[in-house]
Picture (cartoon, rainbow, N blue to C red):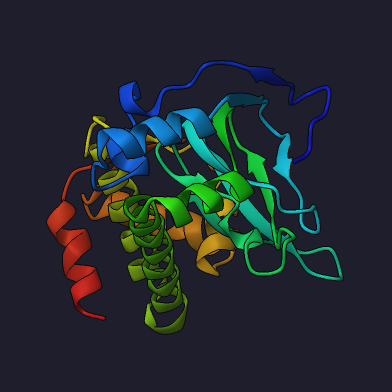
Length: 242
């Protein structure tokens, strides 16, 4: 775990059982006993300022992190210094699972706005999971969810045109925001167009041109980072053509 002057860690009592994000972090509600064990595990909250890292590639893997507020991006950097965005995470989602296999993180996690996370020490989580099968099943569900998401990204990059990639990205983003009680049609992009392009494997010019086309076609209303989806069915139709 990396702690810097810009990303101070502070002790706090965090109760999973009373958290309004628990159904997003833990899709199937565990028993009272399992919740009590989780409450005992999650004792630390950490604030991360915009532009600061929660962890870096190569850092020792010690914990996984549940995002309570804010937005993150994960990225890898090639030997020649090029950045590749590998994902965007919002409240109710987990960070740090990349470190499980090699006991070291394989990417950087960077806050793209001020954020707060719950720190879950992995050795204690693993120990509790062995003792309570229900917790183990929950963790397996979370791992499966991440695998399915990775497969979705592979589909984006492997078989879709630029318009289809951006349509799939916007529909996925609005779906995740709707699950958190936000509007399913109006949103403010926390990430830049360059970051979206890096994630989708597209150049910045292509992203800007596609946004403009969607707006001229009456599919989106675009004002800088403010997006309003006017015709979600048109976006879905684009994806269905793939």
